[in-house]
Length: 619
Image (cartoon, rainbow, N blue to C red; front, side, top):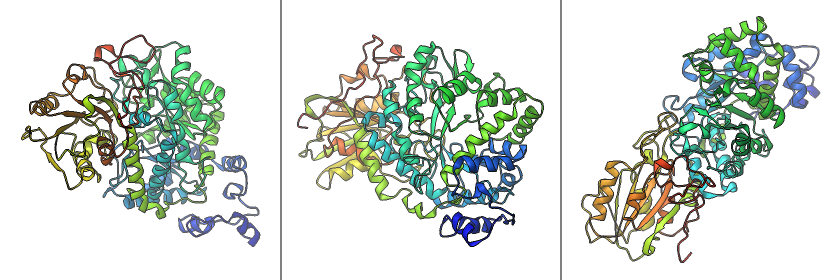
């Protein structure tokens, strides 16, 4: 390498106050002198030139290492260096101990220093499912899930949420977000309904502004730019019966009209990666569908980023447990560039090497995958700024982000019934009774993908519960009484609020084939409030519409609150009228589960149509 003053000045790009060459040296990679500058380490060269220079220096093992992504619990930093691993991920609930922002930054830097200690010093990326805020980290700001954001109809708000999430990720080092989910949900029985912005393609398409929030105007635009992922390609929201990882049985015309548009818009916005779906299209697993991945996504839509598999997704190609060399070859040849292999990543490396050496996977495909992956690393600035930017640690769960989340919660509330203008709550109401299992429970109001994969009830992370928000907004002049089961309510109260809904869940375990009704416990609580002969407002905390048809006539008010996250005061802001309700349904609300699937334009009559939502009369 050329160490002349001019060359050093040309390559100088500050990485936390030091030139990149010094940063790499301190990370453990000795610099070796050569007759000419190393092009790929010089940020003054175009990305294309840097990629080609680095690719020419890489062995087959170097290249295969870039194409595999192990789960953090199955790999040590020393393995990252030994096997030239290009990326590591945290699956849901996989976190360092203690689970806090600083521990995440320490963990990230440990892996990164190992990657930088290899001869070619190729930095790694660290991927997380930050699907509603940096939700794996205790103390992070948890925003409403996508279904609630779809109810806001506010793409600019969603962009700002993406930017806030990127800041919190940057402080912890995580530089790759497996979000947004831009699926079009067509059956509310699906356990990932809440990960969708809505049932018509225009809603997820409009909300792809979150990509610009995460990445910036372009990837690498600013110090908090993180790689975004449009998922799951394609049609996972349209599987038969709402079966997670099931089969979407639709003609290509419907796939293109309903499910493809949000991906087209994501590509237009420059999304850096796309994740393949577990599901199938007319019996063919997406992880092996070369037509959709290579011909449609990469060639027709012009996607220049890289495609990543879902977690152990190649295992399902042949329908048998685990993966085979044939499945590895099928996935890579279909156009998957990086493969999540949680535990058996060494076996994957051996299988892919053997498939290349045996002629089953052409070297041109390996090189294409590496070009796509390396280009994004260069664009992110990882070669210049490889370590966690701890200047942003203070943003994790910070006041500004929580205030943004509170506004998002308020904007997502959908008022669906308001008899006798029971809402907003009257300022003269001196006694308010609150009941329900979801009233004072951060875990329930945040839902799945919160600290753990499936989420959990209880005080899982700091925040403001809906009950606490009601007390805060009500002020000291009012009496707010709470009993989870409604015990103690009587006619002396002016109004009762029942905060009820679903227990947290995520994909797979969240599929429902029952009647979608409220639980018996919740119905008993509401009935106890009704027996007091006072107005009753039901606030539903759920990841999808539930069957409330037979009960609705007994309620004075009904609000769809979705899964608001950690800032429950946003719900109270709407209940008390401090914020006027503006949310509108992002999905059709069925009269019963028997109507599923139900979507706008299908001729079925829902309980509430897509777009329903009442303002307050004086608003």
